[in-house]
Image 1 (cartoon, helix red, strand yellow):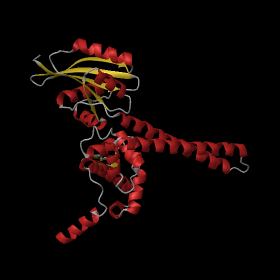
Image 2 (cartoon, helix red, strand yellow; image 1 turned 90 degrees about the vertical axis):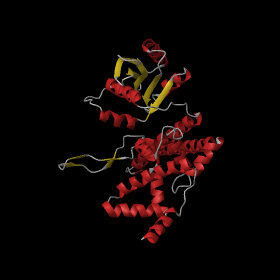
Image 3 (cartoon, helix red, strand yellow; image 1 turned 180 degrees about the vertical axis):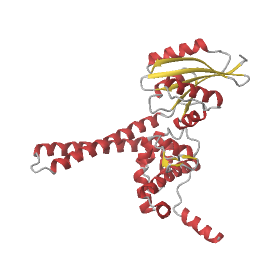
Image 4 (cartoon, helix red, strand yellow; image 1 turned 60 degrees about the horizontal axis):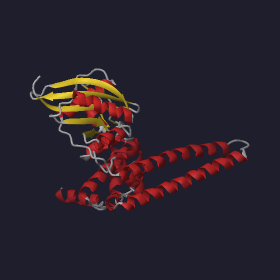
Length: 346
């Protein structure tokens, strides 16, 4: 084999296991998948992984660890490798998924995914991952805790409704259920106050949140959720990538003239981001003339209100990123100005 110019460790991360592929790229651009091994996703497993890689590595050639952003399961390993001084790249799952489709791989296993990640790392020039601010991790913990709390409260309220609908409700049961609801309400209030304090502690994040909150329907909780789930847009490079990360990108299934499925959102992305955009989209449709006009136009086109709402969710999320990048607040007269300009041109 020709001279080695690049070495990549591709890691498919699961809750309990790391499936690892060590690959090399030669001077003539030949890719070699050199070795495979699985390790436990624990601190002990991390040590075994680095010792195994050290035995295979040419110290004179650059080495990079590449993994997907898989919820929270990749974080302990990323923090461990970063502290040890290794070059790390963390890639959005949709990027790896799209790349996987270009390869001649017929089966999807942990091993083939690790190989795909390695191949991706060898072919692409990737940016190095830096440990995000601790505040984003805290915000994510709080916003996710609040989301779980709201789900629990909905379930308890349903229990209260069912109990009250009985012919002879049990008074003590009803009282206990009401106490649980009151407790959950109190805890939600505490979480929201903690989120507000966290945001105000960091001047840069505070300013970013204020810019995001200039959008119709978007409040501090939504801004905090978006910043938390993207680590302050650390892995995001454009608005389309953000939509895809949230699973709000549109997928079409079409083959020749015989197969043509309806376009649907992929839903293969961050659930918390998608959920965070639902209520803001409904509020924007009700109270902002621009978004209301878009909603009406979309409904008149295909007649499906929910589909139009999802389109508004996607547009709102993309606009959050645009405002963040441009460091500019939302112009409520933007759509009026755009329509006026079109009339003048016509």
